[in-house]
Structures are given as C-alpha cells and as structure tokens.
Length: 82
Image (tube, rainbow, N blue to C red; front, side, top):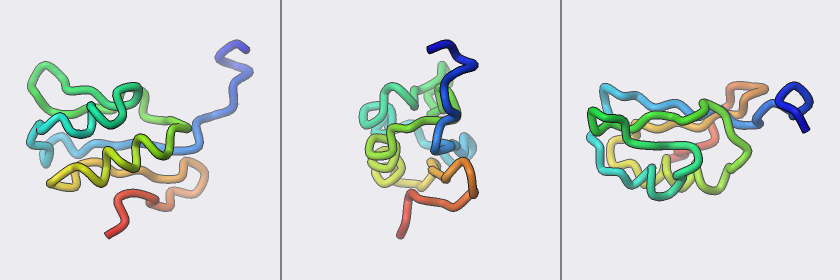
C-alpha cells in the first residue's frame, strides 16, 4: 500500500519538550514512535500512530507527564489518564 492509500493514524502523540527531563523511558517503551533528540529530550517520530499499547505505556512511564496521546479523530486524551 502506498502512503496515499494507508488510513490515517488513529492516535496523535505529542511531547511537551519544555517539560521533558529526558529519562528515556518513553523511547524505550515506544521506540517506533518516540526518540530522544540531540538535546536529550523526547520527540515524537511521526506525530501519529496505531500502536496504542506502546505509546500509552510511554505516556504513563513519563515522570513529568510530558507525553500525551489523543484520538486523532476526536482529540480525546487517552493517555495518560490519572
């Protein structure tokens, strides 16, 4: 399937880079979707994903709640839910 034929990702992943303290827990939990940038802070690799379990774990592992996962279609936050 080409990129134009693929459905849009179901979840949007955002990182508050000002809040991030660079533990790397997120990148270890969801390496396809999150990485540490050269400055040591997390960044979303793509912004969207279908890998809900991995990015939910990443968001819940973040000690400063710098990662959020939302349903792309509605904007409803699905992780972290505290």
